Image (cartoon, rainbow, N blue to C red):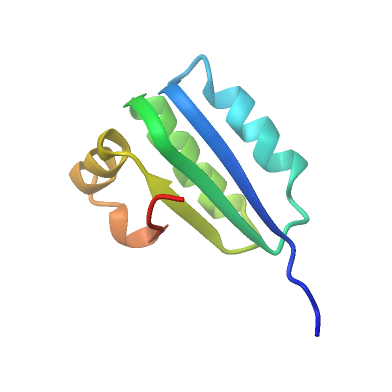
Length: 92
C-alpha cells in the first residue's frame, strides 16, 4: 500500500494583496504534494487580489486542489461565479 502525500495549508485572518504573496510562496514550496488543501475556514476577509491568486494557484497546481472556505471566501467564489471550478471541502 502506498501513502499519498497530502498537504494542508491553513490561512487565517485577512487574505488580500498584502498577504497573497505569502500564500503563493507556501503553495510553491509544496508543489510536489499529491493533494493540496487550502484551509481558508478562518479567513475573515477575502478580496479581489485573493480571488485572483486562488484562480492562479488552481491553474498552476499540478495536483488536485481542495479549498475549505470560510463564509466570506465561499461568498466571493459564488459571486464571481467560479465556485464550480473548485473542489470545496468541508471545514477541516
